[in-house]
Structures are given as C-alpha cells and as structure tokens.
Length: 72
Image (cartoon, rainbow, N blue to C red):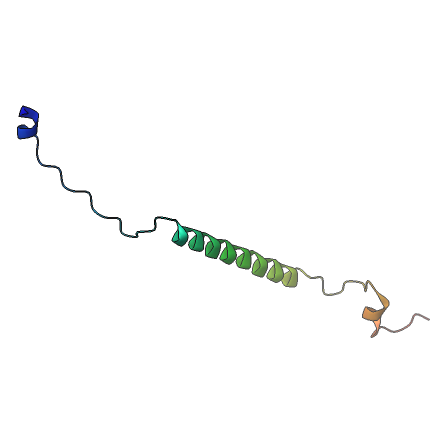
C-alpha cells in the first residue's frame, strides 16, 4: 500500500494514431510500395537499354536490313 501512495500516478496509454486492427492499411501500403519499386526498376531497365544500345549493331534478321546496299 505504501508503494501505491509513494509512486507517481501512471498516465493512461494514449490511443494509437492509426487504428488498423486487421492490417489493411499496411497491406495496401506494402503493395503500393512494391508496385512503385517494380515500376522504377522497369523504367531504369528500359532507359538502360536505350542508352546502351549500339548504334551500328549488325542486323539480326533480314527484315531489319532493308536499308542496306548489296555487296558487289
């Protein structure tokens, strides 16, 4: 009893800022973050493919070689 009298009163715990008991908000934010990350990786891959494309690469199929002159 003396401990109850000498100890300071404990404040009541504050309510959570975001009440999300089932975790829906966390799932939505995780999915949105993963989608944004995947989109950034795809954009970087496309930009990397465009930037590092060889300008004078040989044609890989005859359809790509339509504007070439025949060898004589």
